Image (cartoon, rainbow, N blue to C red):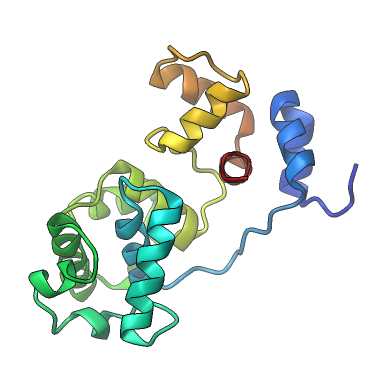
Length: 200
């Protein structure tokens, strides 16, 4: 086996023959262990809701260019109205959601938040306007760096799993989630490889 693969990828290669082919085709994917800035992560997630990866990337780049920043910061948005945020290329609800995240961050101690259980974090995040289960899954993956997240709400993941025959096209949520149990405790790594497969 390629020595470049991470221990998590080697585990998945042994555990799932179908995913094994995907991982070997993709090569190793690096997944950072360091937590990301929560606000920057949230803005990226909000931008990405209900649109393609390419469209999200384009909007993100234009917004960062507008702010002359490499990452999104609270101070870029706190003095803007919802209408002004919408004019940066977002829907009205996404603009409202960014404002709601700023209010949530003002109320929440991040140090305490990071020490909560996954279920407690989810409960807190779902109170934010415009943040649903998919957004919570993305936050767990890319901010908390939780290695064991499978997001049924992600259309690209469902498409990938159907495409390579992990489940059939009429599969239910239970079918998808039962299959994903094979990847425990490294479901996030499986998702990264399925996304890579779909995007390439």
